[in-house]
Length: 55
View 1 (cartoon, rainbow, N blue to C red):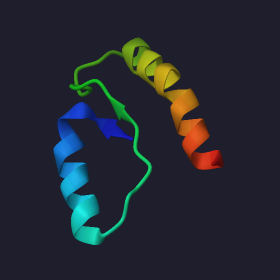
View 2: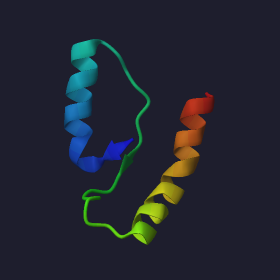
View 3: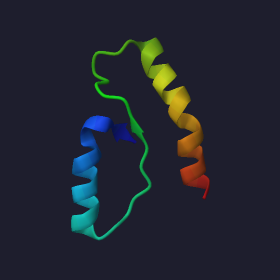
View 4: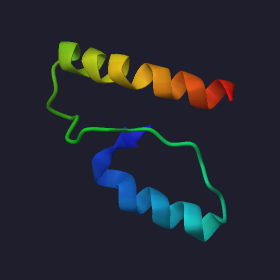
């Protein structure tokens, strides 16, 4: 899980490692978000994350 700022970096790292990881991206930036905003991001990503770790 990472913010959308890291989409290209994640793709480049995956390619260099020859590995396609399961990824979920949340809107960037995250550093200035309140606790409630962070919980909302996590709530929206939860189902995707759960699906990836249980597949």
